[in-house]
Length: 233
Image: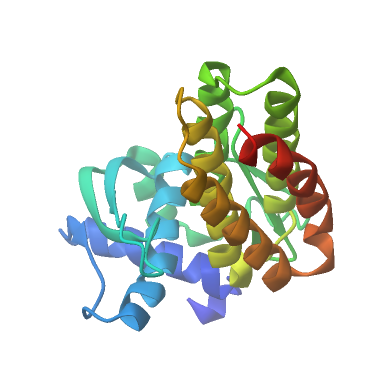
């Protein structure tokens, strides 16, 4: 694949499609420790992207809900429906992954979920994008005040914008941030939200902002305004 001038991310995408074509229907980490799990997340993201692009029919990821740094990480991805006609086309002509070699092209992952390719570099996380859209849909069920719901919507919007800017190397941070926002929305749907979950979610968002750096500052500015509204409910 190196001779085809594909980025390492796109090469990995090609390789997982090839594995599926050869009959692999379950993807999981190489080992049981946290480092193996972290390494596996890039494979999980590739499979999510392949499904969204229409290269494979359907996948079912299984996520961790453990509060030991693994929360939100994919533990396993099952391939329910294999390669589509489009996926087979990619295997026959991998250069199509570069989207006609347009360096400013946008990969439309769905009507609302997008990743961008600039100079063959993939930006954003598909996992984060899906959580953001799910949170937007869940927000209408929130029992928080109107001001809090407005800020929750602004928070999701800022994270969505940020997800289109961060490189794949910071996918774990943006996914942690998105998981925190998702938990804020979910807790706000309860008549008696768990304050401990609110506090942990704001901490996760702040930690992710610190990891990503200056471009994530708008996210924290909204979170700071939102925090006193939720933590006093």
